[in-house]
Length: 227
Image 1 (cartoon, one colour):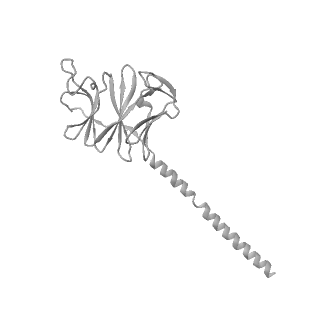
Image 2: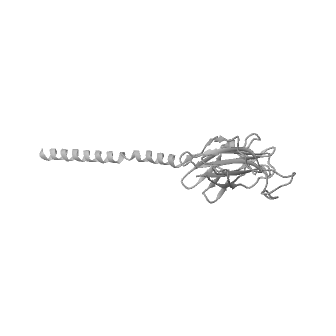
Image 3: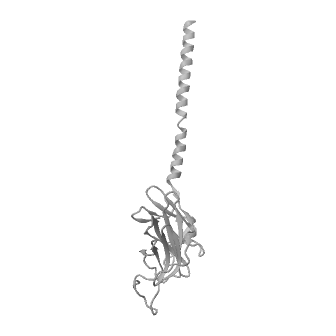
């Protein structure tokens, strides 16, 4: 009888111990929730926004199409005016046409992009990462048709050219900036396209392809096209 009671007590103790161990194993479910939060925090989407425009800005010898105030800087798009219909300095035969300028708070030119020649449209669009205040500027290009855009990174009142996004939407009325999505992870900025099909090299080869995660990736050094 004593033996039976002892066995019962021992079995009860083991059962409780196993239950405690089971409870300890179940607890880490919160870890996966933290991992999901971390992934969300690490991948940030750039949101399109419209900075304040400037109406009374003048740059000597430069015809301004549009200008904007961002922080202590001014982003200006336009072209140097030809003299008597001829290309004049600082333009050259290989570097002329619409371009982007960055001015400091004293309206001094601290950056000048390369001219894009005889385009009909060179229009800037702005995308902001709210977590680190980086701004991507994409200047949409067009003749009678849209043909991609130039991407720039503006950070701490300094700007750098990222590269040429040589992509358009599958329909004539779909321009690059209508389908462009920009996201940033710890080591790169990714440019993707919200369309099931896109046109590569628009205006020159017009290659229609299915969009199987076609993208550009920028790692602060190189700008790579991934197909």
